[in-house]
Length: 357
Ligand SMILES: [Zn+2]
Image (cartoon, rainbow, N blue to C red):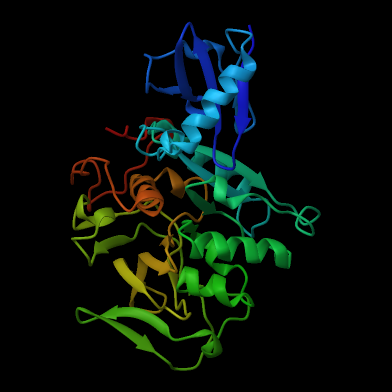
């Protein structure tokens, strides 16, 4: 009894010979692509970190490996892992933030994983780690940034830009848009940012007025907010996959609302806004999408703390936005006005997050 196993950047492929039949597995999700054979008992699949392995049932290691190479060369084994109903791989980056990332990251991880659609790996990058930290971004469908800290080393920045340019994807949550003022490509990816000394040199203020997007070049700091309250989110693009299935207006749980963000704002769509009462007194972007190269970016300013992340508004938009960034589609069912009302701000246990179809 042994397994032939083989590592590739995106997934571990295990090939098992059962009698004369070959079974190709994606054990990361313990799911079988049954090209030839039916499902194998997933109990024999072990996972260590984000890699999985299993045991070969016959001693014919060379034979099985040759079979695998044959499948690889024929293109069968490179079947898109989305097509197999596999989970979308999310890389959550945290470890430095002026917000409570230790409490916030688990809420996002639970929200995503409870849907059954995502598997989340977390990289915690502390000040000590950041000097030489690097990760294989290409192993993930989407990067979820909860990071607001020191600059990554140049090698890591280049790898990240290459990943996004070539079709990698990004979700930016709240203070992740405070990061990296000096990193030009990152600011193009996030569209708008705040703090970190941002001002008119970083791009215009971008907000919503009279049914249109305004780009305002006036001087001033980038990033501020008023007091925390339950703010009303208004959908401005009802046709985008992220917002199409949402009520037109809904309330987010009590938290601060970012305003006066500024940045290049290129290739950016504003999907939803909220009026910054007691702040800028403008309709400020809350949900945005940006494209950079072939990459899709979803940017949400929601998510100030672990309590407001329990908001149904935060959770539903995180689920839909993360799926859209990873795949370009949203398969979650529409959210009704009862589930996400405008007259009260509902919260819920992230483990009760809605299931993917
Ligand atoms: Zn905040």
